[in-house]
Image 1 (tube, rainbow, N blue to C red):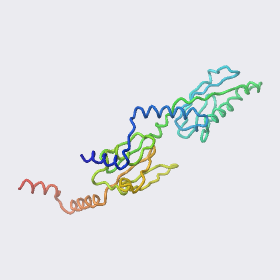
Image 2 (cartoon, rainbow, N blue to C red):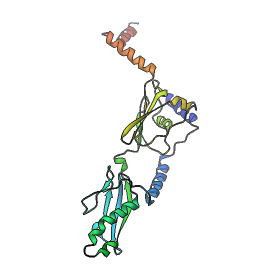
Image 3 (cartoon, one colour):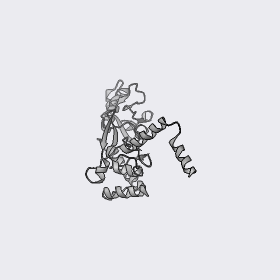
Length: 249
């Protein structure tokens, strides 16, 4: 009942936020991403896979047809080329031009004009980015169902907590911690979720790789300390004493 009440409270507090149906949303997201990848100004990303073809005088060179995958460090290795290409900051057009520039001398031996007629095409195939950068948001601490939540564009802290079935009674909603890795460093931000629910603060959008952690409340921390203190001071477990007292009555 409490988890249902928590979800209802979140729904009312966030203005009846609707969660998109996964299947239609994923289909739309796939279409949008394919459109983005097709843009010539799309920046090459780690995990991207590209299909490369070389043409000379309009004729395909099958021995140089290859599929490239961008490494986590942003590098790709070409057939018959010793030095990898650093794709950091490159667009697809710039990658194509670079590949064409590297291969041109191989087909210009004794005839520079042959190399000048070399053309390369670069076609986006898919992205394996999730292999290294999971598109998930982790929710943990004092929530009823700690879990990794698949990222959705526009996902917020309140929605993430709702997917985790809300906080436990011992949760401190005034000091929820949002952890994010920025340029290799972990950055933390403290959020007052209670203020957000009371419309005294703005909900915060989360991104892939973020961690939402709900700590213990101060009262819960004191309860735990008292329990541990008495367990150290008394040789018999206090719960054992209570059980004996119960059966004695």
